Amino acid sequence: MNAMNFIGGIFVDAEHQQTIENINPATGERIGTLPRSDASDVESAVNAAKAAQKEWSALSIQERANWLDRLADGLAARKEELARRESRDTGKPLVLARRVDAQRSVDNFRFFATYAQQQEQEVFEMDDATNFVHRKAIGTVGLITPWNLPLYLLSWKVAPALLMGNTVVAKPSELTPSTANLLCEVASEVGLPDGVLNVVHGYGPEVGQAILEHPSIRAISFTGGTSTGRHVAATSAPMFKKLSLELGGKNATIVLDDADLELALDGTLRAGFTNSGQVCLCGSRILLHASIADRFLAKFVERVERMVCGAPEDESTQIGALISQEHLRKVESYIQLGIEEGGAVLAGGTREMTGQVGPTPDGAFLRPTIIDGLNHTSRTVTEEIFGPVVTIHRFDSDDEAIAMANSTQYGLAGSVWSKDAERAHALAQKIETGIVWINTWLHRDLRTPFGGVKNSGVGREGGYWSLNFFSEPLNVCIKHD
Ligand code: NAP
Image (cartoon, rainbow, N blue to C red):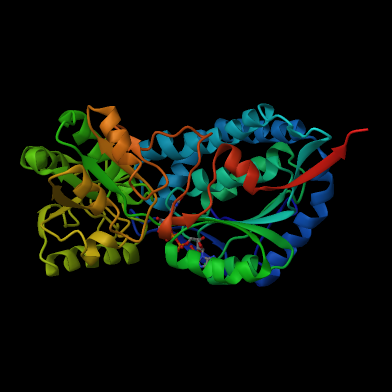
C-alpha cells in the first residue's frame, strides 16, 4: 500500500510529488511508497492544524474523550490489518504485532478517553482566597516517532495531545509509514474534524526539522535516539518550545542469588530479545550473582539457541527481521567490536534462519546473540546496540550490581529478579533510571510515569504526566469577600 500525507482531513501527495520506497525488511521487497515531504507540506499541515484549533479546544474534555473512543473503536475493528501492516513494515513477528502493537494502539486511545473522566478540578484553598487550576490547550503540537513500535508510540502521544485540546502535526519514521496511514484512514472514517490530526511523511532532517523549526508549533514530543534527541533539544529550546524527550537505553537485568531461576530465565529472555532487542526498554546487560551465574548461563544459552528466527508470518517465529539491512550491519559491527574487546560469543551472531517459512536471502535476519567476558565499561556494553545482542556480567554483592547498572550514560529502565521483594525494592531505588521492574518486565500501568534520566530523556509521559505535558496550567486566584 502507498501511504499519503493527511492534511486538513484530506489524503494528499507531497507538494513536490517526491516519494520514498517502503521496503519489507524480512524480504527486501518494495511494498509501497510514501511521500517525501518537506517544509512546504509541514507549512500546509500547520495551517490546517491552526484553522481547526479554536473549535477543537472549545469542545469539553468529555466530548474530546468521546472522539478518542471512536478512534479506538475504528482501530479495534481493523486490528488484524493493523498488525499485518506493522509486521510488514518492521519485519517483526505477526504474533508480536498482534499482541503488542495492535493491542496497545487501541488501548492508548481507550485509556486516555477513560482517564479523562477521572480528572478532578485542582483547587488550592488559602485562608482568604481560592485557587483554581485550569488546564488549557497549548495549540498545535509536533509529534516525532521512531520505527520500532510505530503506532504504539504515535498513539501514545496523539491520544493525550488531542484530549487536552491540541491539534497535531505528526511525523512517523519513514521506515514505518503504514499504520500512521491507517490511523488517518480511521480518523477519516469516524469523521474526526478536519485539521485536528495531520500526518506528514518523510525524512527526519526534512520533515522533522521543519516541525522543530516551525514557530507555530509550541510543543514537541519526541521519541527516538539520544543523538537525534540532542539535536531536537538544541533546535527547539531557543524557541522556548515545551519539550518531551524519550530517548535511548542500555538497561540492566539484575538476577540476585535468591531469584526464582525459572522465572528469571523467562524474564531475561523476554527482556533481552523481544522485537529482536529493538525496544528501548530491552535488558541488554545481564548482571548475574556469581553464585548462580554458571547454572543460569547454561540454561540461558540453551534457551536462546532454541529460539526460532524466521519469517514474520510464521506463527512459531520468535525472532523476526531487524528493521533494515543498514541496521543489521550496524548490529553486526557491534558483535565484531565485542569480539575485538575480548568477548566470547556464546550463542547467535549469525544470519541463520530456523523457522519453517523461508529463508529469504534479502531479509535482515540475525540470530539472538549472547556475548560473555566483556568489561562492563567497554563500548559494546555501554553503547546502545538496539538489536538482539545481550552481554553477561557477574557480581558478588548488591552494591557491585548497582555500580555496574549505573555505569552507562543511559538511565531508562531495568529489572531485578529476587524472591526477597524488600531487598530488590531497596536495590531498585539505587539504580539511576526511570523504571525498575521486580520479577517482571514491560508490565505497564498506563497511569504511571514513563521516561528516563541521564541521556535517556527529559520529562515523563503517561497518565497525569501526559496530560500535564500536553496542556498549560492557568491558575485563577479568587480573593474571598
Ligand atoms: P531516530 O533516528 O532518532 O529517529 C526518531 C525520529 O526522529 C524519526 O521519525 C526520525 O526520522 C526523526 N528525525 C531524524 N532526524 C531528525 C531531525 N533532524 N529533526 C527531527 N526529526 C528527526 O531513532 P530511530 O532509529 O527511529 O529509533 C530508535 C531509537 O529510539 C533508539 O535509540 C531507541 O532507544 C529509541 N526509543 C526510545 C523510546 C523511549 O520511550 N525512550 C521508545 C522507542 C525507541 P527518520 O526516520 O526519517 O530518520
